[in-house]
Image (cartoon, rainbow, N blue to C red; front, side, top):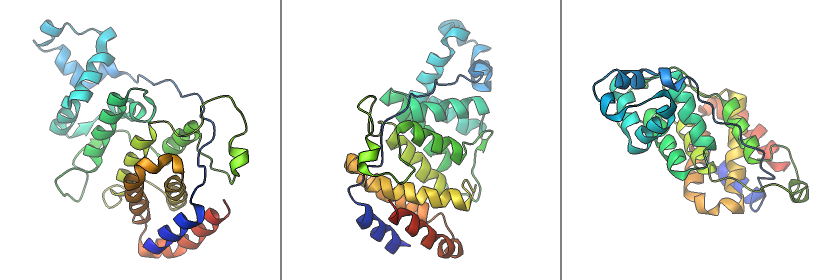
Length: 245
């Protein structure tokens, strides 16, 4: 498996993996006011000191997220609700605030990669992002899924080119998702094949040279997602697809 990663990197070194970024979607606020941790707090005596209202819900939850209390609450309950899962996921991939996207990424990585080794994820997740959400984020970032040349990748002078700062969190989350296959298979075979191509191309983009260590871990994580039997079937298809770029 390691041989394929090295050969692909040499073949595609110096490519431009990103073109123009697309407008980022609005961050959803999926019924945050009704989530259990918040309702518990609002009904407690502590709320008389904070005077939390529905208008302040997001700001309050952002504070819990950044200072680590949201992770502690989720770990205590061994459960993450759909509204919190979606909110933190979209913050991680689309927030322009470094503190929020980094905290949201840590939140998810702590859930997917707990320190205690168990056969199953210790936290029940009501909503888990699919590969479609990860792919959609890359498209928003301007990632070039088609076999385009450097000239074609810079068609217009308008807009922002190159990866956004959120790409670090995207890489960390995708790698963590690969490492939990034994506990929760996340990707289909075809999705994992495309993810290998994404990992190799990201590693070959000079704009991401500062993330080489993180990208190397990502490449290894996604390749190790395959069983030996699956890899024997997928390896040649992946190599052919990468060579056409």
